[in-house]
Image (tube, rainbow, N blue to C red):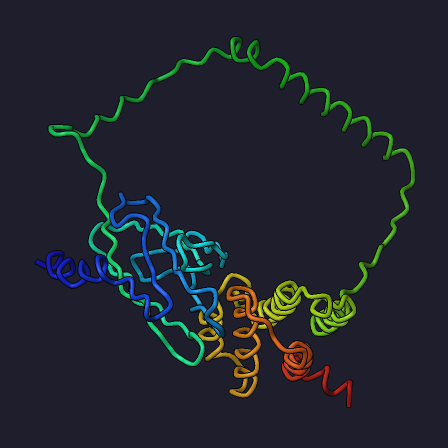
Length: 309
């Protein structure tokens, strides 16, 4: 009954849900897959629509549907007189059988907030031949090893081990006849974490990436440095987490609400640049690295602030 209810709810959306009046629509290349197989979901938008803000999509759509790969946004030439379209593609998979709903994606199109239509993905199990039975576990084979045969089969390994042993013994004997001076080598002390990150910020700023048009590389490098700092400073897997997952983890961290808000704003702007191809203003790019330095200064160990004072 649950499956029939879901079908009754979502089939009309599948058949008639391509609402061109929104300027966006979503579709699946196939509505039914076997468990572990992949389906391609595409979100289409009119290329002449200004101010498109794409949804931020993590590793999962729902707890039943996973995102294998986000292919990003491409421009395609549509048939007829419809003009070019912007298309964002996602490869999806699922490992639970059943009818699973793909909820609407919320997007900002110009001054409007629109939602795509919901979709339904049917995941089937593997077919088992009728009358098939589990195979029995084969019995344990008891071997009767012959040492001589084993030595013949592995004589190269035995010879190599004996040769290495003879060489090691000769080295020990030679070293025993000579006085060996102990040399204590002190490993160079690694600079503190905040100093390394601030130096990396300086290097990134000198490269002038966004000034040469590479906004994505600039924001990716900057947020990777921030995430690496957080991971080492607070022992949180920041490099492997989405922005929402990281901000959720940091709710119980020593960060103040102001520091959390500052970090969240930087990460979300970088996500828009990396995944939605947003183009920040020069003031926003400059403010990013200023905010990053401010965040590191504000969260560095107390001894750092005392030294600066």
